[in-house]
Length: 281
Image (spheres, rainbow, N blue to C red):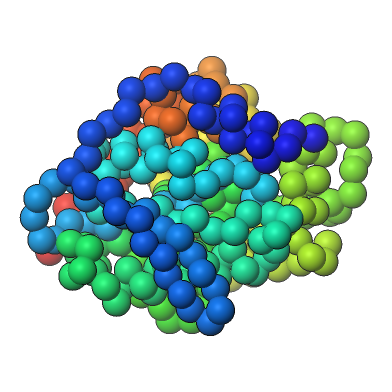
């Protein structure tokens, strides 16, 4: 299966323009023994912008602040928002729940330090692609259960909401075997796949979650599970907007680099972010 270096190289090799932002600053958060690097993007001069917490993809084993720098820049410039990208520890060193706790650390840090980073903490969206989409959904569940900061929108781009992989993470010689291997790296115990913070699709209770936008790709192996998660959110009364980009596979590196190939889906997410924030006074 592909190494984390190969995944990162593939993402970085995608050709795409680099959006311009007003400022970029690296910082680190220290909580409960966890040190989490973050990168803060500001769209313009000013004191109070909507806020996006970006949780990068990379199949839990790859991805970092650099692979998703372009996506962070794109969200910052197009959504006119402060973007905080979280550099959680990837597997196999970063085992569940450590990376997810780092995302929660970052969310609570944003809510406490909004003034310091020109962020309006009454307007927070969480965006994640692929594995980051899984972790975005999981973070919203965790945040609800802990009565954490208010999240106004969850945007899941080509998410993987079910790591049970139809019952087991053992190899079955099918198209999900790569996902099963990646899940095995992320989990210390295979039974953790049944934890709703690992597989949000198996959660019993999806009520009281933020509105969602779920971006799917027509030819993606994860499309069906993403649609099932959208259906379950809607059944639980969560306003959920679903968009499926036709003729494309899992966006992976193209989404991370905000290439023209992925722009259609990313613009749908940006439009939903604009819409949700414009309704908040």
